[in-house]
Image 1 (cartoon, one colour):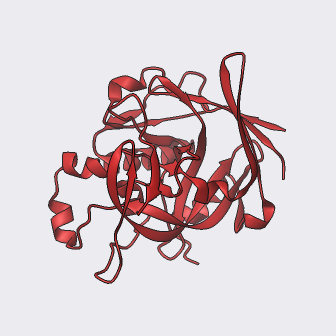
Image 2 (cartoon, helix red, strand yellow):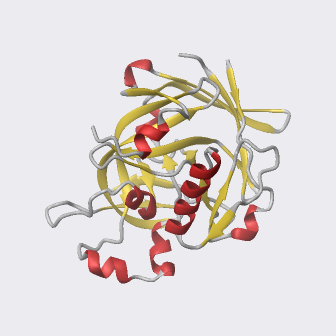
Image 3 (cartoon, chains in turn cyan, green):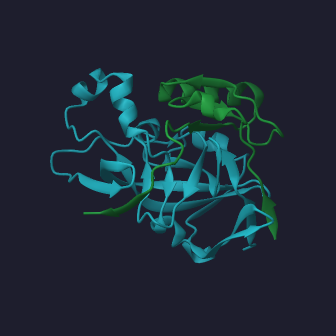
Length: 184
Length: 74
């Protein structure tokens, strides 16, 4: 597995370490749109916003499932843990690497789906604020990650542990198979 | 060693609170679509992808300057 050097991306007036990912639910045959997710070694979870979970048809939590809370600088959010595959896009190699993983799905702490559907945009967007955060649960899939600066520019290096990869697919050719809903 | 660079729209901050759709492969990506509604942006990205074959990225522009950082669970 080759090492990768990634330039910090400039987004919303700040530079940051981003990776291009998407989420996939094999049981539903649903793929999320691609997004730039920030690497955050301070977070212990992979956090996905409410809408991202909806696009891959994550099941709303049942009455026996436990909500949990995450505290941070941005405040407190409620979430429920759900399994799915996160794909890391490696355009340079023409591949995408899938990792089966539990994500912390931001969820409005509400079991009544009807009530959720009636919530307004502003209220629902309260569960979008974190964006996609790749915490230590994701960094555990790497042999190493190194953040550094050179001439006032930020970079990071990473190398994936091959043994942690659950699926390797061609990018972008195999995406159509996922979109067409090839359930596994 | 492989080198990667993701390009983003320079004027993204004016879309604070909205979901924007853009192509990270363009040198100076333009915002193809924006909406405060996540589903609309996701659907648009899929629509453009189906039409052009280009894989676009959807990103929500945070209202604040700093992205939230989350530390620990209970």
